[in-house]
Amino acid sequence: PTPDPNLKSVIRPRLELPVSTPRRTPRAMTASCFITPALPLAAQASTRAQWTMRASRPSSRRGVRRFGSAGPRHPGTPSGRGGAGAGAGAGAGSRGGSGGTRRRMGDGAAADGGGAGGIAALLGGLWAGYNGALESAPILTKAMTSLVGFLLGDLLAQKLLGDTEDFDKARLARMAAFGFVVHGPVGHYFYGALDRLLPGTEAWKVISKVAIDQIAWAPCFTVIFFSFLGALEGKSKDEIVTKIKNDTWTGVTGSWKVWPLVHTINFRFIPTEQRLLYINTIQVAYNVFLSFIGNKDKDKDA
Image (cartoon, rainbow, N blue to C red; front, side):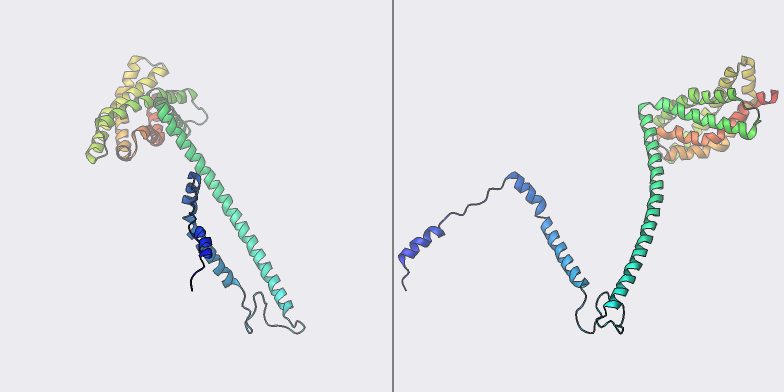
């Protein structure tokens, strides 16, 4: 049949209408970048949730015990509601008890974790503060570190090796002053120069640094130590020289028994800026020996 020309004229304008493309703004494009990749994930999650709900539904077939039933039906309960109610009540009670136990266990674990986390956060804050002080004021920080190390060493020496009833505060102050004035600043420059002279942690460099420290620096350190303490005690020049002659060899050989192994670890693993902290950690015990030989004559006179 011949199509009606009037109908064709009516339909043609509709077919020839231009299709307007929606204008995509930058905001819409940005939103689509985030929303479009998430659509498959959302669909997958929705499908998984639907299958989970279907799997958790109780079966309605005959001969299969319904969800929540507490056993076979008893006389007087034709529909089994009594048994189901009892079973549900017992199940809810057991779930409530186990839930309370789990909550108490969780609270205890959280309390223990919170205490350990607080200590770890405190130590981390102290370590970060110390490293920040090393960057801003390295000499002062190392001087204070040595002050604490020598103070603790003499305190232990007087408590363990001396007379606990006659505590010498002036001696404690002299040892702390040596750590602050001499050991910290001089150690900063000495170990810095040693690392610049022999950079790296190769075996031969570590051995060379230990040899320089113990052969060249240990005798000089011992002489400086006796001279500083003698000057603060008000000794004469001859008394200081006599002290150096009598006890320098004892101090150097005592250093050789402790520091070669300590400095091998020091020069191999410890960063330059933290060497004084590591040394003073070990030197708290070694300073007991230094305090003993440094104040040996005075103890005899007393």
